Length: 489
Image 1 (cartoon, rainbow, N blue to C red):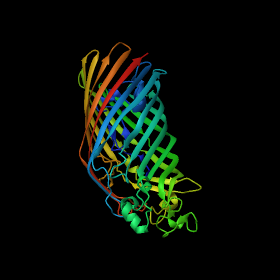
Image 2: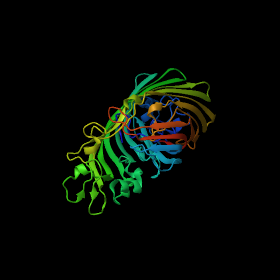
Image 3: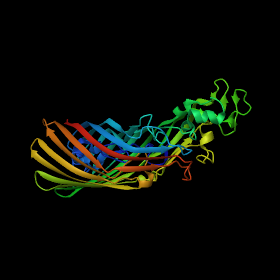
Image 4: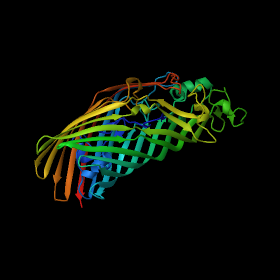
């Protein structure tokens, strides 16, 4: 279901971090020009109007009105193999044991900047700072642990930059952010599906098997709007040496929506004395006398909420000119993923239905608790180095390599997020078509190690529940293609 705090909806967290240049589910794709250097030197290098996001302080170094926009195509695939799962009563789950999840996603951005005076600049931009998506096949053997995961954050940010003197500038931006997410999985009702028709009928002494239990599905959706901020410093203390410090705040969302579950068993305790049902035992499904089958609710809906905090990040960047044609770039960034401790789906309904059972001591053991997944991510670092070469007056070439530390420990890797440390390389180019118009192109490829997942279910005290489990091996690969345009008015 969902996790408690920070990052995520990792309800949103999730996939496998299929985002090509992503750490956790943070996206870097707000600048094609910076991508060419693997985002090394971002915020220090004077590029285009995307500085509205990457470092508002550097806006003071741009001349006149600028417009920058672009599209990033993320294409990624996660393959799983040797997958196996156990139901709540310990029986083997039947399903697909190998396969893949593919992601092909377009990530847009657009920024505009201008000068108010020699010392004051401003800008505004639209971009996507966080996002990811994954969706397993319905017959995936681990379907009781993961089905669909989707999160998207859209941001609109105005920024200002102020020049303190000829060497140093400061800046800040205020962002309005809308987050929405979806999280789903199939439900394992104490292994009722895995018992099979013969065993179920034998237990009840009648042909009461209900195949609908095998299609019991849980989904939660939610959205919210919240504010964040960006702070930046830009300086050139020595000619040809540009430095930048940037800070992007955490953003606290409270995603509100509905939890929906289909085909849930109706136990005898809930319909005792009802003439429409035959009660065999309080803890067993009742028999629906209108159908002669085990009873089920076709759909239960409960208003729910999920706390989501996208993490704060801090970065230092350097852009060093070595000659008239050649410069090198470096960046080091820290992300506060430790705020992401768990996914908690809580009831917000005056007339609860789903949480009547999920909150019980034998289940999640917390009032109003609909879902819980422990995460316990840790803070992470990323590093990037790059080089920029002016091949001729209208063509500039770029290259870079980066390392992103995985924030997820081995004991908390899941089918939703089977990731490892990442190394990725990128190349790019800028082509100056006219005095006013230029185009940026970039390509990146992600390298990552294989990942093994051994997942359990837990109550909110992190005590394992039942005998359910999931194990599988994963490998990930992704590429990024990007194109952008810059126009000077």
